Length: 244
Image (cartoon, rainbow, N blue to C red):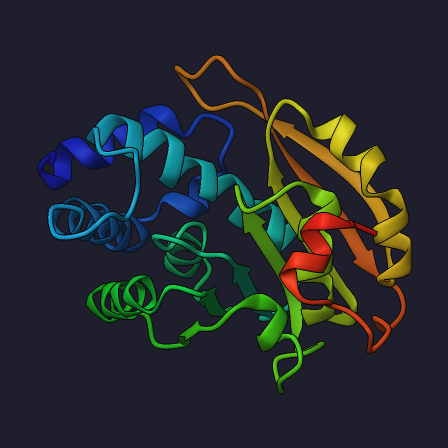
């Protein structure tokens, strides 16, 4: 792992296109904690396939900073953010490190990962943060249903499946922001029916690139315009076998 000064310089180098306010000294310290913990705990159990410090910086941290900036473009207040399928804490931990005024919740079905995320958030000094060990389709039938201003997900499933797992958590008037790769146009078209049935409408696709990485990335944004019917989400086997 880099020392913090090298980390800071590299982070700024890779963060072309991200406003400076998201790269304050305090934020950089928190992000350094995220990377340090990821490196240390990955030695003990599988958290991420990406372990090279430079790759972690670009593909995990900087990627999530673009999302954090976009969250503030759509939700101007100090809203509640839910990260569905948070895995090793991406994007939940970088978003919490960057957006001090927001309440962030990480949701993942693996209890060991949720324990890791909670511990890392504590080490960062983030206070308005929660982490829940549950399957999304179960959590969406709890008090978490339609309780969030922004729901996001990264590398979980195709949009036709992902939308049913995420949209039930969003308040009417809130937003679903999905992090996607090269197949974005195909996925958006494929998910049109699901998006409509679940109570959302398409807003836009925001493209972005990360320095030194050749592939273009995308944020797909939907707005929740009506409550999701109580039938959804179905159990995961139904969702995956027969997407809406």
